[in-house]
Amino acid sequence: MWVEYSLSLFVCPLCGKQNSTRYYDPTDFVNDILMIRKRGLGKGGGFEETDRYSLLDGSDPDLLNLISDRVAVIYDLLYEDVEDDEEEDEDINDLEEDIIE
Image (cartoon, rainbow, N blue to C red; front, side, top):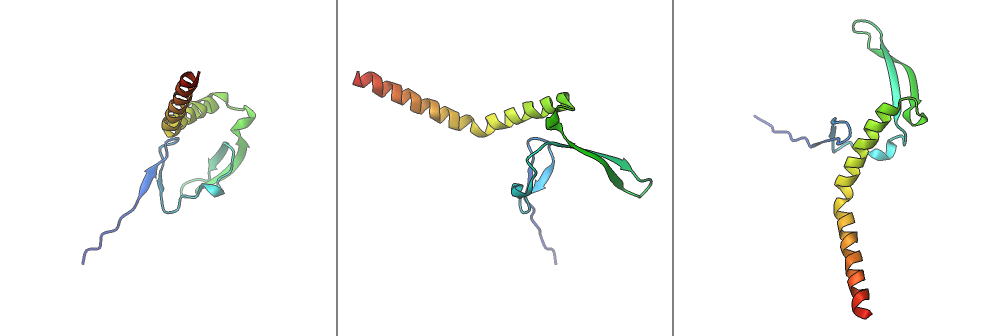
């Protein structure tokens, strides 16, 4: 008997990683941009963390600028329609003011 399974994933617009929609919960995320350095433990030994620090401290401005630029693009993707709606509301309010005068 053949059983078909379905899996829903989304691609993170910041890093390109595929994430399961079922287990995605950003409430547990740290509100920081962390740099984590690791070193190898040899063949089959895995890795160990050697350093962890915030990129917000200015230690790697080039990487932080890349992330910042990408976040700006994502913000525009998410709120472009909202800004357009607000501009339309402002235009309507201006028109109403002109009619009242």
